[in-house]
Length: 213
Length: 213
DNA sequence: TAGATTGTTAATCGATTAACAATC
DNA sequence: TAGATTGTTAATCGATTAACAATC
Image 1 (spheres, rainbow over the protein chains, first blue to last red):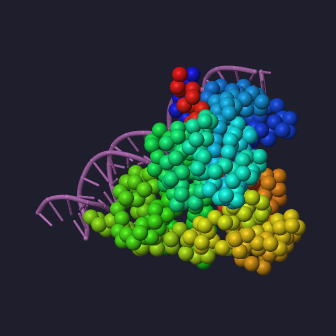
Image 2 (image 1 turned 90 degrees about the horizontal axis):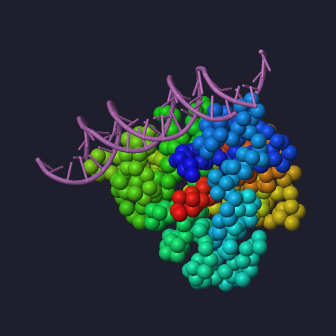
């Protein structure tokens, strides 16, 4: 199995290509070129070809890429075809927004349950996902083969939740709380930090003001 | 005014340093070293020093950085001290989650109003931000000096919203819809795409499965 | 065949890390 | 002074872009 190390920037562009492909597929388009993909997602054409070539040779010179085939291959290689079981902790506004996100089905991620401490919420459900009592989390993780934990609790509670997750064999954490989590290094953490996006926009807006008279 | 070009990766780390500093300030800590910051946010110490040095010399050899002073300077340089006025379009789950995000105050971003087409929602408010009729958006943009538009509508409506925003003098767009927006190049767009984070996590989880027997 | 487009090798560009003198 | 820590220059590393032969 070809497990060459994929550069991080490449890895982050692949989902964009994948989405672009899925839109073309919906339109019934059979073949696309790297130029088509590049223009759609705003990436240099050579970059697109190079990114795709990390995994193998999917295209045909003079023709392009078969949409259906490329999607299948990308999906397999990225792990979008095997189901990933997840739990989400923190059924507040952010948590319910995340759980309603349409992307989970596309990537075969199944949120088995949400957890919260609020008695009002426990027992209800959001987007067909039940909200369970936080106290039941360790047991639930033990009984179900959950690989991914999604943290949408307030910052102060995030580390504590991360500790429970890592103590119960979770493999990866998708963290929406704006804190640096301390976890064992074999656990993969992805921080989804709104501050980064907002701050960079502020920077550019402010720079314009400075540069203009 | 020193407007040297800041590398993109540096720009994205600065908000993390800023947050780290704000936590120390809360604890009453006066001085920190690049080692402290680096360990907290998970970045190489030399990287931290180099990043900070792009803006000027803020530290003292043998001593470190004054927390209060460094925050002030970073805040000024990043544009966190001048108020940025924003509107948010799409008062669904995602929109209400975003509007309740605590970071806006920290970065002096003021969401003046939310917009939606749902008559049930129009006239109500979320986190003290009023929800107005979408039809009123162009007029509102004209009458108020809004610089930033936040898009939290479904994918199909996103381009249309972007068109209204750009036609009415918006400077930057924070886009949460998973689509590639076509906008004039002077408009700064930041895509906040959950697919990227989810997909990279899927990739790592899947890789483990493959690598393990 | 001619035109289009891929995949790859080489060249460029940019970011990170290492080394170290300067400073407190 | 000795130890700590900064800011900067040089060396390394990695990613992007350009050039081009191979293929349909």
